[in-house]
Length: 171
Length: 349
Image (cartoon, rainbow over all chains, first blue to last red; front, side):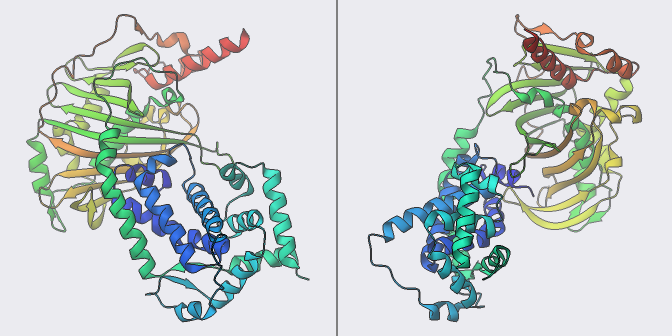
């Protein structure tokens, strides 16, 4: 079923539509959140808040014709807010054991392999705006034009942030 | 040093997945929120049925042929039924019950998107309607068409006069069409209750089994054959040429009455599609059987300042030639052409 139809049904409070949207995009959203936050609990909070907000007001996205892009933008914005808040608190280093234990365990909250965690940590060293564009493009599979629209940036800015981000990761 | 492409591949390998605990936590909270806010939202989204005001121009007029499409789809949807037993639903019960209904009202949603007009990364141009449809064995069919809560058009098929009528409020226009008896009977013979029954009796379909529709336990049936588009005679099918369709009907397992109908379809370029390829989605729900139809529903109220469409005024010669002999007026096309002409005039000034 098409996204637009699901949003239509969701606006009529159809819980099945909500579940379908969640299952369609949850992993992409969690991956982007992890790439931006490098912290499983924060990433889960971020996606949780996004869906709760979306359920409260799906009409909010009527002006936005791209459901996936809209949800990605919500996650990115919430991640930015969380990062701002975390800057005021002591930063906890990532505990790799937590993720190692959770790997391949369907009962766990978030499943992140050790390799993935290392990549997320490498991405965490990028400036936030580059990390955001790299993750939305690579993990969110969004085109530069979509990212530009969602973040209200020019496509040139998006492309240059992406280029600088990839260049930094190379070094 | 790795190439940018290699870096992209490595970054792309990083994935996070939700475990069951995360699924439960997020979905439970989101569903609670949905339930909490749904009451206010549903009230806010109810269209004001008494609303009667002139509407700003909108591209929605281009698709006023939606009513015609709905007739076609309605036919396809209601065709896949025989009288045999299917799962727990006994079709004979459905046929029997529906045959005793003299009125049906239901709501419906239409979504039309242009195919091949997509901007990269953006969804295509889309229009959405919400409609309330009244079907009466005695009077015919009336449909109120809303866009974002505002009444934009009314479509009628009057049983006694064999006449179709559209009132386009954004254009302040109305049009009447005398339909050939054969075509009129094909259309109304399908979507009035008795017509439905006839079409319940034949056709090929796929059983979808048990499901939930609008919180009701249902059994579903699906049809995917565009050739079952019966209401259009062969010569008229190019007007709204449906190329692919998936249509489903959901029957309440307790009452043996339909509770929902859904369809998705693609069209080729046709007169009533504005010569663009369209993707359409249609969903009918909230069926009321033998419900009292509000007084005045079949008495169109055309404001004094509305003028009648003169179809041929807006048609280029080649199109006139194409529709000569078809015996019907494509109301949606008229509105569309009218708007195109206006733009042309505006440009020339």
